[in-house]
Length: 295
Image (cartoon, rainbow, N blue to C red; front, side, top):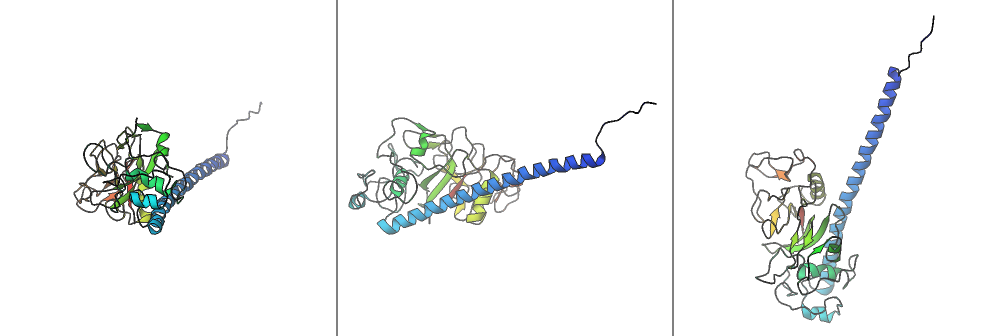
């Protein structure tokens, strides 16, 4: 008789292999969760730091950065953009950090023209209150459109990544906000466009940030799911993903029944009521953007 050895894994060996695979997958998932959590903390800290810098600037110079009047700029010896027109959106000292249009009138949607761009110069090059040395935004139109990586010369890069930047604007209610969304291009007149990019934040990221800072509701409180998208409405719009304006009008929230999907930022389950972030429906796409009221 010839003894034949049949090779193979015993049930115990198979179990051990599956256990090892499970541990590896679990470790990867835990590691990714830690990375995601760190990114959220870094983004929250960045907004807090900028908010504190604006408060400190106001206490020291008795004016808001960017909005500070031409006479005060001269008094304090600012070297970056020392001459400002003092007209609407150009250092008029009215307490609103706003942009200006070169053709029509002052518009909130010009975060890279006038006070909305100068705020970063005043906080960095002129006062040293934040990191960086923003000094390229001037009281004139840009000679050509600005794309990454040169956008970083005008606006700070968001800690959350994903082509997001932090900018400042005043909405139609004259409230000053930090905006957090993806930017593809800064046009010659100072308008920003997200181009083919999505708003820049996943629903999970937006919800986590909102919850840490505010009430976790996308249309209420000091943190809201709004951003500037000049390709859509020329001003602030509610984030909905995929280049679509979300439910609501202007700065006003809505309780209209709105279904959720893999491409929404928020919904109310298609039942009239307060909107919630679409954490259960979203497929992980970058459907959200946020605005933080400057306090």
